[in-house]
Amino acid sequence: MNDLLERLGQAIERFLRGSAFSRVLTGCGIDPRRYWLLMDLFAKLSEREEMQGQLGRQTGALRFSAGLFFILGSGGGLVMVMFGTPVRIFISIYLFFTAFILLGVLLSETANSLVNPVEGLALAHQPINGATYTGAKLSHLLRVVLYFAGGLNLTPALAGAFLRDAPWSYPLIHFGAASLSGLVLALACCGIFGWLIRVVPARRLKVAAQFVQSIPFVIIMTRQAWMPAGRAAVGMLRGTLQWIPVWAVIAAAAGALGTAVVFGLRALSSDYLIRVSAMVHSNADITTKVRWSLLGEIVHRFFGGQAGRAGFEYMRRMMLRDWQFRRQLLTVFPLLFFAIIGLANDLFSKNPSPFSAGFSSVHLLPHLFGIMLLSMCVFLQYGTDYKGVWLFLTIPDHMFRRVARGIHASLWLTVVLLPHALLWGPFMLRWGISEASLFMLYSVAAVSVYLAIGLRLIDGIPFGKQPNPSRAAGMQFGMIVTLILVGIAVAIQYLIFRSYIAVEILIPILWGGAHLLTRNSLRSFDLSIRHNLALESGASKFLYTEVETE
Image 1: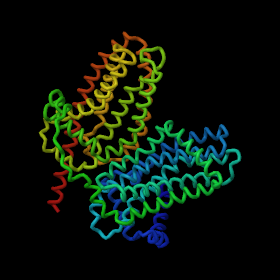
Image 2 (image 1 turned 120 degrees about the vertical axis):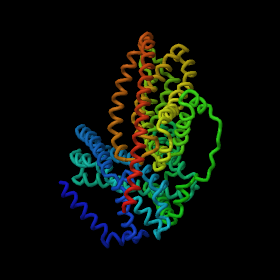
Image 3 (image 1 turned 90 degrees about the vertical axis):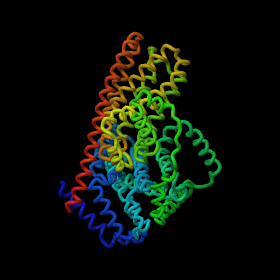
Image 4 (image 1 turned 120 degrees about the horizontal axis):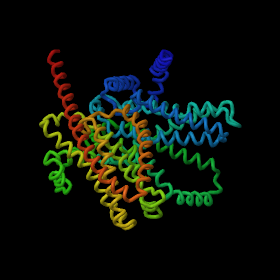
């Protein structure tokens, strides 16, 4: 089977490198020779693990993600076929989920390729036009579309042929529609960022790109606010333009969208490489102002002195600036943020106290904060400027324990203590001072346990490793297991909160466990930092030795 797939891949590659496809590339303004040189260069960099930040160039990560979506899509498709779902509803459901999943992935991949083109600095002086570079740079998006659309729709396309009133050609129609929608979305994402690069100043481009990435999640989470207004606007347009045929409106909308995409792609093909330096070094000339920080003074006094404060300030600034951390956090943060907002809305409208007989959604609050911290800790080890980790080799080894305490303090003070301090007042007004205080003490201890576990997920200095999509793909399975364990914890917590005495006994036990677990995690984190820096130092010595011998 592997030999057959390898031969098929070689045949496709021979066709793509042939004269017929070269004429297509030339018609798009792409130099075929330089295009394939860049494709081979990117493939070699990925093979040598020097270019891991793009999902489409990591075959293992793509196969894992496609396999997971294959299982989910096959299960849902077979269930709907068993219940005799109508053909139109069946294909509409799968096209919607395919478009929704691909939109989030393609926006993130396109932004990472175009807005943070670090390797483009080495090519800006070469005689390569923008169309050739962006064409080679974005070709990996086609692999993402193929794997994701294929994994999600392969079994449903075949099973849909057994639906009532399904034509004999339904598998081809279903799979072709899913692949075409993915291709259109890929072109639309490229067009969107082409307009951004053309319109937005370079120093604001990364912020604008990350705002665009969050738009799909914001639209989904705020649908209750804008859907009534959308229905009213559609009704007004239907009444005003009732004499215009529906097909004309659809054609006009498609034409406007196509025109916007085409002009966005042209913006990428004109002078993209000229803008690369401005995009990569967008804020390099901005001086940092030294300000007095209350949290910094607290960390200096209680969490390791000046070394602890250095770790705190390093984390605070890098979390706000690092492109890879912010990009990866966008995959989970909007969902958790709107979930917390929804819980707060339910709490102040109808939800009872966690000590009441009925279930209160506030029981989920500490676990949502915990999932957010676990996600942050997984992403913290990756960064854009990972090659600058050599700077930590100048720090004495005995100081890293205090640096680790400062890193822990940055997360505990900003993500654990501060939100709970802000929530304590509204909870006190809602439930009374005793119930609010007990729940806050329990919640802070529970989230501190999550943070202690998360520290063990940080392998080495934060922001000190190159992003690895294969590990990000493995997080999908880990997230499923985490959600199952969280569900069990919520059920146990609900039973415990039926009794005041049980909660009062549990709180000091939980605080003691959080203290012991945090102390052990900090020791393990300190050893992890030293170990990774030792590897970095050894790799550097090996590199210089190799050069000298040659």
